Length: 83
Image (cartoon, rainbow, N blue to C red):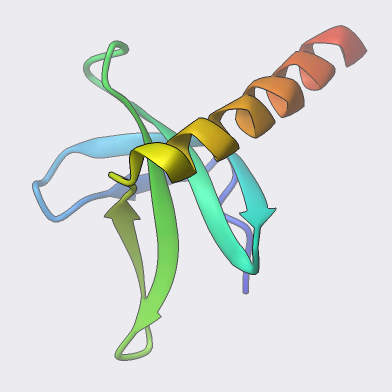
């Protein structure tokens, strides 16, 4: 599957998000996305294939978010240190 990192995606609600980072966690791919118009709107979404199309679903499981949020933080911090 193509990586979405640094791509612009439009969700069902019509809002556009910039894919900041993606990670693989327990065989699933998650993206950290930032709303193009509202920088305070940041989400972690799950990539899924449904009917042959890539679908991004909000992650609402608090335990899962607690586990993967630090992974995004670490990846971004490492990139910033490499600049």
